[in-house]
Length: 313
Picture 1 (cartoon, rainbow, N blue to C red):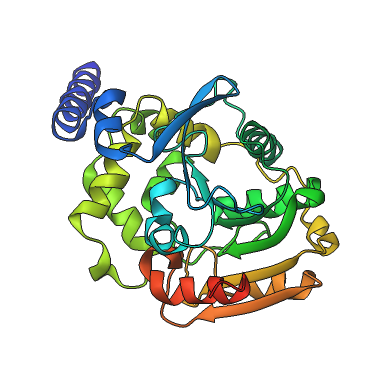
Picture 2: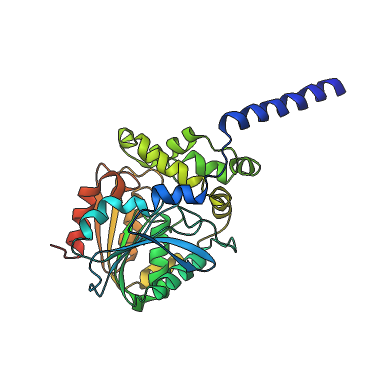
């Protein structure tokens, strides 16, 4: 019996060693990531003990800028197709949220919704912004409506893109999210992160898998390897983040665009109807062939909807 246990133990050690050799990845040095993913107009600003990566583009005279918030595992780059057009006529700000992109982890490791709302408030204050149009995708949408509920005086119009918030059941969950929520496995994830796992996770949120190219996967994968981001994802996925009651959505008076991909299987399109029912002043638009990240997957179609909502010619 002891011999069998010894063989099993040795076999496990060998297996772990082989997996680590094949799929283990060290963190990519921050300066290397900055060289690739933070060229001008990228900037960094100190907020809550972090050097926050952000971009501020378009006419500085725009008194009510558009602020864009990305979702879990993403970065400010997810809005790049939109911004290339928007910056010609509007001031647009976007940042890498704590735990993601080049910003990296929060020193406090507190990824509750209330703390993300606090972060957005500090970011806007640091930039001298007293009122804005606020848009968010997925987790970013959760933060956007949470911020609007807490600071209604600072939001002119609200844009929710496949936003989180209601209790729901996903039809498909990216494998990286599943592992990050699984005890023991999530410990391994902090140093063993196969590129194919990241690719699969991105494909899960796209309706058209053929649009998931190597450059897109490389961006998600390499930014995941920013020091601290893998542990931060585990921290965020294993804590309760809906600390602002969903019932407060009903009190939001701002004109709101609810924009959704009909083929979103992470946050199903049925959730769009719930926002539509609860928000007193909303416009609901469903993109029939888009997935969870329409601004990235179908930038032209989704941007046309946004520009109409914001009365941008």
